[in-house]
Structure formats: structure tokens, C-alpha cells
Image (tube, rainbow, N blue to C red; front, side, top):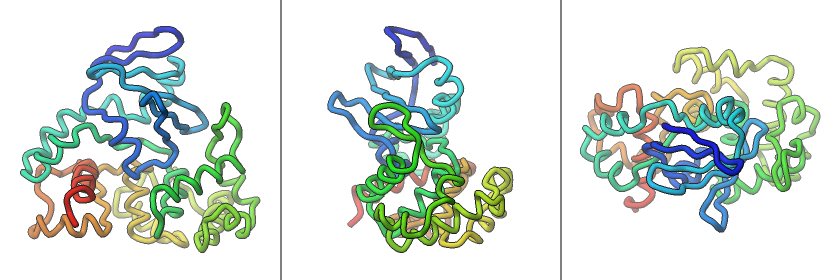
Length: 273
């Protein structure tokens, strides 16, 4: 990847396997919005970004070199060879056709706190509604980053709220889960940084011990927020996909089950009834 600066923006050349829509609007993150010029705007870790594809394997980012190196390079996982990973998982025939059709899905390296809160909100919810709730949460309790964009509120901020405050932004029954999570995290009873250091089995057990966290929420948080790429979340779509793998997942997925899952998930939503 070659990085140059032009007119206050960064230009990235040679970025393989990166489709903005497939990555930013696939249900792994909920704070990205497509703009009228086909660029995408979003916020993460207290920073705003606008990113646009401007050529073959070329992207323009409205950000500074410092913020790119300190945040966005890691967030988009630009230093991982996704092209090589796709070639590996394509040893499976179903994934091979799916990667060819939907090439460019990446797993974002999100903040564990934001991911866990987001996926608790996602329970029994659709993506449009999840995005609306999270936007209200940030706009009401986050700190202003720039016009129209606010940071994701931390545990200490949310701990000062009551369950009714969460319910007022539309989270419904999930309000009691968020209140307990915020209180316990702010008090140090839940240490997400420690969970991130665990092996996958122990990390999953730790998340499942949290009030309001079930298997699906735990798996999604582990994959998208804690960067356990071997985690393979199962929802109704993926359970249907598993009928194609009666003997379990193929060996070529090993270590990258979560990336294969995203391709299979996208294929299932578009091809299975």
C-alpha cells in the first residue's frame, strides 16, 4: 500500500480486497453512512472519517497522517493480507463462488466496548433500527467530534444514567442490560481489556457471564470487537448455511473462520429463502 497526501486528504494506492459497502454496511458496525457522492462517513474511537473509493484499489480518506497511523490503519486492518486469506478460504467451493461475487469484505477492528454495547442493542432488532438507536445514544451522551458526529459514550458516562434513560432512546427491554453492563464496567467488575487477552473459549465464557449477553451477542462481539478471527457466529442464516457443511467447517477456514462466515452470511441473505 502506497500512501500520499493531496489537498488535505490521504490517498491509498494498492489496497486489495476492500469494498466499502460490503464492509461498512454488512451488520458488523452501525455508525457508517453512505453519502450522495458514494463516499462513506463514520466515527470510531472519538474520530470522524470520510472515505471514498476513487480508482482501482485506490481510496481517498479525509483525515490526517497521524490519525491514519494511530487509528484508521488498524481499524480497517490494512496490514493484513486479505487477498491471501481469500485465496486460502476459496479452497472451499461454496466460499469460492461467494468470494468471487462479493469480494472485498473485511473485519473491522472495532473498540470492544462499542461492539459489545452495539450487539446487546442488536438483539431481536433490524439494522436500520439498530443504527437509529446507536445514533441517538451517541448524539445524546457522546462528546461532539464535528458537525453531526459524536463519540460513542464510555462506560462511566452511561453508568450515570438510569434504565429509563436508555429506554427513552428506544432500546426497550435491553435498557436493563445496558445499565448493568455500564455499572459493572465502570466499577471494574467487567474488564474488557482482560477479556481481549484470553483465549477464545475463556473470552466467550467471560462474555456469557455478563447479564443480557447470549451466545449470538458474545460471538459477534468476539469477532467484531475483540478480533477473534476464528470465531464463527451462528444466526438463523448461518444455521441454514451449516446444512452445506454436515461434517463441520473445512480445514481451509482454520484461523479465519470469521472472515469465511462474513462471506457465507452475505451469500445466505442474498440466495437462501
